[in-house]
Image (cartoon, rainbow, N blue to C red):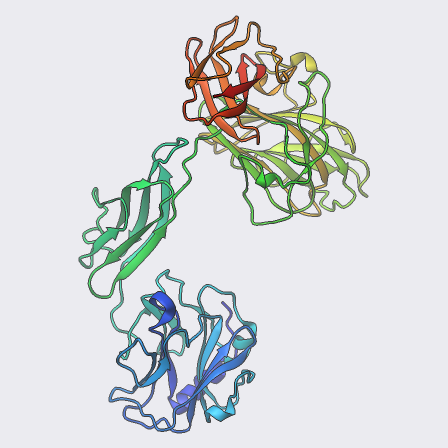
Length: 592
């Protein structure tokens, strides 16, 4: 909100004449049928020669002028202009929506309605009092420059239905409980609702339940009734606003996909409500995870299965034709992705790694860095966890040439960088890891292929320790930093797992082939909702099933003698991927 010196002019005017816009309620329940404007002046005094003008913030011009000739204040000095839905009023504004929600303004002038035909520009001439307001909108500089003061948001307390914008004794305004035809310093609701959370109780492909919570403060001053239009309200354990000064209201047994409205009332001043949006309780992607970006060329990555945008930007990471490859690493599949500058930050989530180490690997190629201006630390483009481990690229010459170094670390700036430099156009293979609990993070840049698929990792390129270790790692982000920090990059073959072998496979089976010795599935087609997997080693294995659009529909760690139960899958053709001890097999699976 902006404070302007024009407020001084208004205060002089109101001090001289006394007539003021005392209260405005533009946002009311339903279709805004209870709006009002309250004027305060000397009791039982004629309002001849005054006009109320409503200004539209979209054009900073008038849209209504109400001549007050023939009207007077009441015995307490109030004059009420209100919608038809309000019974106690002095002037009928009409059925609904007469007072726009904002950003707009209400002003009181000396003059007549004929002085302000529709579309009259806002003016300070003959201005007695005014207030600029909104309902969650940005500041309107044009109205503020003339009417002055601060722009007030009627929704700032998340209770616009029960609150209004009211003038204080010093000429400023506050948003608080409605005091219709009453002093603005009347008693207010002391209870406030705070932070909201909604957490799934379980994660399945069906409909699950979730638990919602709402924090509160200012309790213990009245008797409150807490209700919800779904689920069960729990106020136990020191969380009752009628008794406790602060706490958390809990609602249990809520159905996934169903939002809930929670209401807190005391039969008087307090009538508070909050909307809680249902979370999505779908199962997380199981590890190890592989994405070869086998999506339509030109598509946005955030529209692909399991990816979402974790930023508010819209310059998308795009699917590009072709793949990157690295000697000794499993053959690439699908396409790749490309990005540069600032834009969306696609995120993929997976089953949290809450003990041990999370690994990620990928290939990338810088194709053009000529636009980079940040030579201090460049920009980071790949993130494991919630910004727990970040990979950076930075030109290592000034002016920018065709070589760069690679940074790695936990911080948001100036990471340690490699002593080696790399060339624009080179394909670079990265493996990164984060050890939960200890916060140790490592990076391997172009590790030798003789280590691929091994039980243990080779010597690291760089290592660092997070001073505040994360308890779990559950996401990977492709990040576009800014035009001066993120070069043109091609990115491919993302793998995430819990071991070095998971993310450095030496071959990738195509449909109908297997690198797992003795691999077989029976029966196929599947006719009774389950099938078995047999291998020579007979150990546990990770099983994933994808539909023909690439969406994962099944993921589980299966024991050696355990059948795979898929009775919830529709009849059709699927792709089965099985990983056992770092080796991968892929088959076409037919479900009847």
